[in-house]
Image (cartoon, rainbow, N blue to C red; front, side, top):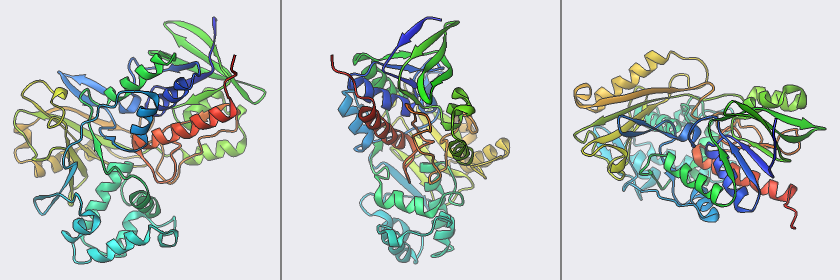
Length: 436
């Protein structure tokens, strides 16, 4: 097998992998990214279906946070278009814009007990006001109100951000996110679909001397004396040994253990991975229409629905995502349960019932492009927020990045950007480049 040397190897060209690789290459590390698919983006990429740019996972990109900061640092083009307003809430058959009004304005539209809830949210800005870990978000809301619309709003917020229901997400996580994190206050879409953002990062990697191998599979990770030594890659029918003192995995901790071999890890770390391997699930219906089906420029969420968390309208701000004269949408839901086994067909049927309720004449007016269930080994998020694993491992030079090792109370591609910065900074500190 031919042997190749790099300073760092990144397994997977998903969000976490590309954020990490872009940071490493920008600092001068000879970086190799190995991706088994024929395109970048992983679970947040885009497919072409009959000329429509259909996202297969993450649909929105945060503006103004760690994601945009990373692009600025590595010199990548950040072409995100923001809808205005970014999100509306359908309450009592009307679209409500809460921009500038916040929680108080939103909850006041649903219940007279809104002020009590707002006070509870405000208390969470201090550690003493956060509930215990065991309390779910649904249980926390139930302390204040039984109003179905309020519970629906909180359920659908949990689904939209964390890919679980309010029954499955700790209230402490929800409240920490919405009181202390950026909480997706500003976001938008890319005109090429979400893959466009990853293509820009990939271009940054390569322009800074990095290498990306698509349609290539890491078969194993080599460890010698408790330290990473490199990987074995199958590429174009040939096996290549690639040596490096640093390996960063974006395929999830459980898959990383399989690539290395369980015998190389400590028993304590293996137990952490066993308990933390809790992938979430989501169902998405991608559909199009000649006429405009929802009167929103971005996203529409719901106070009452069986399963549907939101509908996103892409083509108001990104008409390039559809053939001329067409509108492109996605509707998303989390099943019950979002963690564990469920009946895909019946759960998808509930999502379609919601679509028919919210869009009169849906079956006649909409062209369904695909119905996608993401779960198990290809989930919307690899761990329930609040139960994430550490990004470090028990092997020197081996890290994980991505949504399986998120920082507390974060989610989605923003969490991937955050883990990438943390891991890249650790690499810069522990494996500094030797200046010639």
